Amino acid sequence: MTVTVRVPAKVNVQLGVGGLRADGFHDLANVFFAVALGDEVTATAGEPGTGVTLSCTGPDADAVPLDDSNLAARAARLLAAHHGLAATDVHLHIAKAIPVAGGMAGGSADGAAALVACDALWKLGTPAEVLLELAAELGSDVPFALVGGVALGRGRGEILEPLPVTGTYHWVFAVADGGLSTPAVFRECDRLREEAGTGSADTEVATPDADPALLAALADGDAVALAAVLTNDLQPAALSLRPALAATLRAGTEAGAIGALVSGSGPTCAFLAKDADAAEAVAAALRASGSCRAAHATHGPVPGAAVTAGE
Ligand code: ATP
Image (cartoon, rainbow, N blue to C red):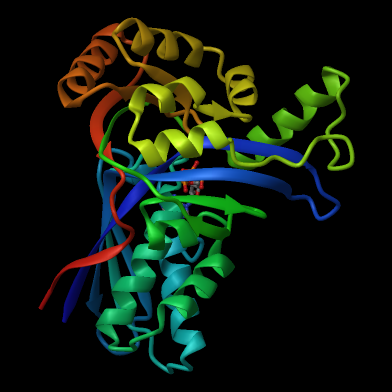
């Protein structure tokens, strides 16, 4: 028995970061947008007693942990524990296209895909709302990878509200060499706020909210209006830790992108293009610029984790 699940990466078209809370998290106003650039996770029934095993292929495969810390393995175990399954013998193969530690929630995507794949492999029929609860236990970005489309994430990002969106948008992602640690980027964001004298605590920073202009642009299918209001409160921190990203953002903009921002905690840079041809041209210019390791033209929004094949 084998089940394959395709799962999208995300870009945050808005990432509003509130102050540091007493529990160490930040309140977020996070508009997630699922793009066709994605991973595939294939679950195959294992021999009795083998437990959860993993393999990974793709350009970043060496950077993916193949131990118990892998979110796909944790997802399989969590689902089995929830249903009280005695045996969790499954092999999970990750065909990885999402950059690792790139700010596109690749690990979270694999966690969501593994939940869906194991649910189908083990014929559990777990209700969608239960899968969402298990996803939120795995990590703040995992529920969105299940849902896909465009959604507003509040709290740590895990409380999701699907958003109305019209049309298809054309994106380019410039992949950097090496990743950035998400906690390190949040710490740098706090440090920059302290340095600027504004303070970094949740009592000092306004609670972020979704930008009405951004929601209207998405609902209207207006890529130019969306491009004008793309925001990422983590961008100054990502640029501070990785100053070379400024050149990447400039190269994409000079090549005709209508919008540019760091994706999530970075270092992947995201560019909005006016159509598919413009996206291909921006990707080609980024590759030629030498300011990134790879550049991919893609589109969205696309649905969340879904079974594509099984036998
Ligand atoms: P986010 O945008 O959610 O902050 P990210 O896209 O920046 O995340 P990931 O690709 O999810 O980062 O990887 C972050 C770390 O998670 C990796 O460095 C790796 O050690 C660990 N990890 C665990 N499981 C996976 C997985 N399936 N794929 C990639 N990384 C994983």
